[in-house]
Image 1: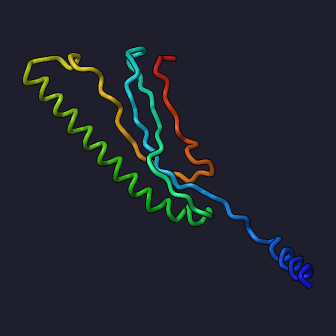
Image 2: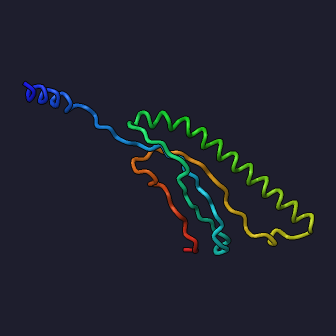
Image 3: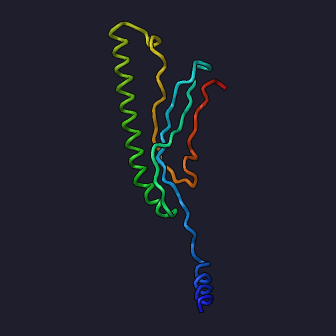
Length: 132
């Protein structure tokens, strides 16, 4: 009797969807000044900031929408902070009568973004530190 019950159970389970782990991941792109070649170039490092495991694509997509709002807010805050910093540098240069070439080239800023991924950290990357 037990074999019959177990076989019937497994027969019904054949149509079940397997659990699929999906990660909702918050990333930060950090642009850096690479060098003066070709009029100046920038590279990008991409860092995993935070993540949450989910067990279906549907739940990941729902979470993605709310975290996208956070990513947009963080990007706006980073841009505002960078703009304030650049303005303060300009004022400092003007007060001293210095040219903008006195300071090093500024970085390219930060951008936050979110995605759903099957492999955690699959978008992490380090930009080249040399001109190519």
